[in-house]
Length: 243
Image 1 (cartoon, rainbow, N blue to C red):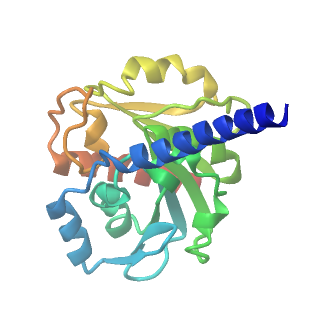
Image 2: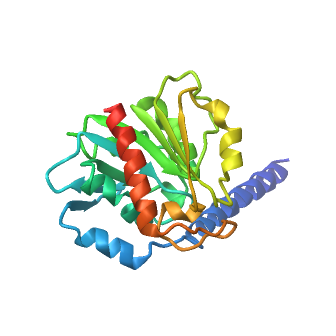
């Protein structure tokens, strides 16, 4: 009997080990990297102070930490740096601090850190919006009750926030082939009744970052500069109403 039990436990342990190794390998394969030119422009911008922390990338206004900040959680297997350019206008034009998290295993689903792990990187920022793209938005919904507001970028909630009273902004892309406008609309009942849902014409799933076209996505038609301007305007105005 002892031999049988040893064999059973050994077999289960081997299967679990193989599963863990498989997940680790899969999480590192096919990560969508940041396009070099938009990122270089952010690094060279004198209006942005870039801090590369082990937990997150912090983009702060050169004049000092913004009164309002955005904790932004990347989509699955997307390099966090790929979002720096699209969010940079919030820093230079709206005076916000942007914290782009570095999810464990490149998957927000596995990242169990609380919101304060990231807001603590800018202690002088008083008001915090939590948001994210795709799977990162799903994780942001789980952290939303610890924030002052929620912003979704090509994403939707899997948990019920309808009675939370939180200010919510949800941005969709008309050409998004993954988090389609229809999927976002179907999850509308998870959000408060006064949540603001906006669709950007010509935007695809990958339009929210700078990492190239994503398999399964539609074909974006909006120029990157216009997408950046739309994000700056929509999120900036939303932040002003929250703060």
